[in-house]
Length: 225
Ligand code: TYD
Image 1 (cartoon, rainbow, N blue to C red):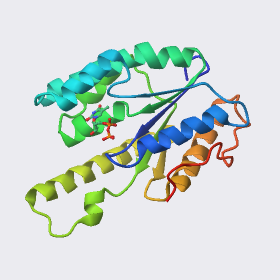
Image 2 (cartoon, rainbow, N blue to C red):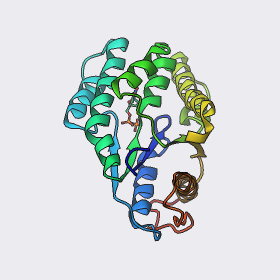
Image 3 (cartoon, helix red, strand yellow):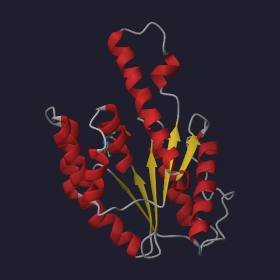
């Protein structure tokens, strides 16, 4: 924890519902009975002007060589932590962030096979900054659930998604006190309630926020099936 703030990161494979859960949690934190908090929602890649350019380059530009890609994510991360995350935490705010270092470790380190160096360059870029809590939204990848007569390319996509999923679960196992693995295959409101209670517990652990009532939804979860 930095300067009385609290830093929450959401991680998980593509399409697990991070944006929805980030919006719901942020709204709850802003309106929580126990004392609303100032919340900064942000993302990687792309939480700064430089980051938006890097995001464009990595995700929508020409093919980027994997090592270069890992370095671009780390560059975005270093700048983002220094200019957005740390200042907000020092002001005592809550930062709710879409993806961080574990995305690089899992997508570049594990899935692309670049190994341990990926974590080291991110830690170097951020001077070792780690979130107070990482929420892993865990769900069986859609393709796996739909798997029928897949061709070779589709099977590779399914295997890739499975490696990503397992990568995040393995990260959470390494430091269970800093992670909350939440089953994201359930209805949005159930996932949101689980996320709230894990966040409330983590906030209590760091002190000063014992009144957070995770059972109070704060706002009506939208899009509930
Ligand atoms: P994101 O914008 O979170 O989109 P999505 O809605 O698919 O989650 O992430 C975009 C992609 O960037 C996603 O496929 C994961 C990838 N990514 C990495 O490969 N490494 C990283 O370090 C980060 C932050 C993201």
